[in-house]
Length: 330
Ligand code: UDP
Image (cartoon, rainbow, N blue to C red; front, top):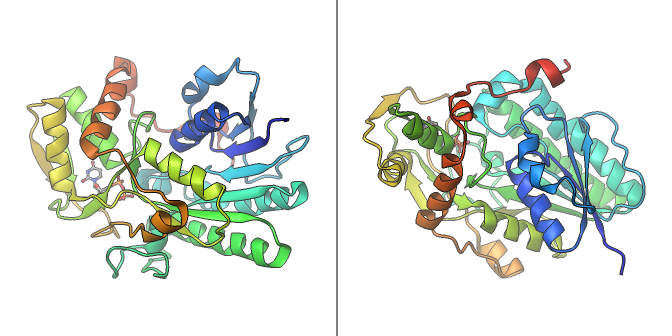
């Protein structure tokens, strides 16, 4: 039987590159698309030369053309850290809105099934805990995270409209904090920030008093959940994440212990609109997809640390987050 073809946007990013690996491993042809603003081709190096993999350097905010047949589209292109939203706010809005519209049009034309990467950020700074899919959220549209949160909320609305009005087969995953190899070292997220600081011998920066909580999911578990959701028949949003909740201060202590660093933990101002608590209610994923995370944080952190240790001194010390000059158009 001919292999099915999948388009993965954001393929040179953290999640996109893991998805590309998983689909190739499971016998699909993969077209990886990325504009390389925050993505890094190093994440795909091992796939060039694989005859089932093809890379397209393209910005999905502009009309998307993929020749030939296409069976599945996974839209994972987006900046995804609070530092990114401040530096490239308009690109963040465009990829979630215009990019999603273009890809839904492509899905409709190709009769492909499309899965979009939504986020726990649609719940904002939540007043309901843990967060279940029926909660509508508590989002500040004009705050620093608004460009991401509202683009993702618009993305969900647009996806449901194409599903209901045009009958496009769609899936929506709401991704909670995820970590693992190939995370960008200097994107400002807690885990790469803490590990990078430990490796460079700098103090570990906890924002606020560190009492805010997050629930971290190892990337392999997340990819497995997404895979199961894509092949399910459920079109409404599904949370995928690990409900094992921890305060950021305790998380920082775990990283200090893991890296055996003698650095001290220092406290900095809490960024505006930083959610106070976050934990997914994953009953839907458990019931509908028979999915739950399997990898405990201890094991996941060890694998992630092993990856960060392979980075060169130059990569560890780089503070440039973007390929600004090369790729950004305004
Ligand atoms: N954080 C921190 N120190 C850092 C980076 C992040 O204490 O150097 C905090 C951040 O304020 C937030 C939590 O860690 O409360 C998780 O941040 P991340 O950016 O990883 O994810 P998000 O806030 O989007 O869940």
